[in-house]
Image (tube, rainbow, N blue to C red; front, side, top):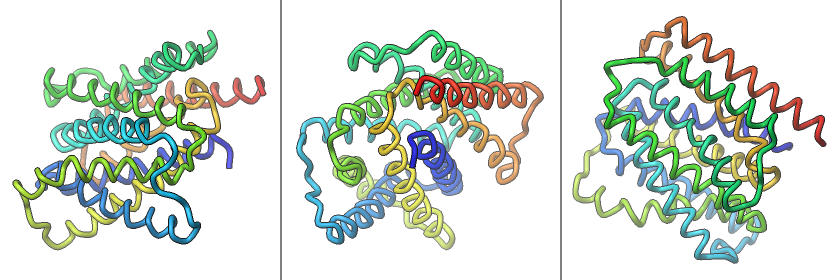
Length: 276
């Protein structure tokens, strides 16, 4: 499967995960992360055993660093998901591709071309159109979202550095490290899930596993600056899910933003194919 298709599949599964997290907003964020992490670790262990893969990998320091940065990003992102509308939380989070390109240029020597910067700017314009102005999004929550996006970008670039690692190992380290970090908080502030909460918690874990697996393969197969644009499609999914499932309104400027994002994604794909 191509890097582009892997990134699109990853975006779809991430959108499903976000819906699950928002559906259990009465449960503490770190408890959701621990549940999610436990499910992913179990899935990874099954495939480790089946394919006889060493789960600890080759570059343990960088794998742990990827786990730590991803864990911080996840905590901040889940917090915004629970406190502001789905579309806005996702919109702020999708600033991460901007940071990804910048960090890739600084540390991986993967300078984006002028065309890639154009499409990136076009997508960012779409983000601005969707974001607009909403009293439900405070400055503090917006800054938390931006910090989450930056930490996500750091984690994505670490994945690129770890391109020689088995994708399953990289996927494993994220929930493994997150589980270690947040289990003590979960025990201290435990909230027992009720009824359908169990379904959403399990679904969040399963969808996240597939999302991270496809994303890891995408970043290992292609330059970061060439595929991050496709993550913007997640904003489109969150707008639709937010409107249908949570009755979150969509204004005209949101449709304008969605159009710009789709154009940027298509333009990037055509440009990448031409370069290849």
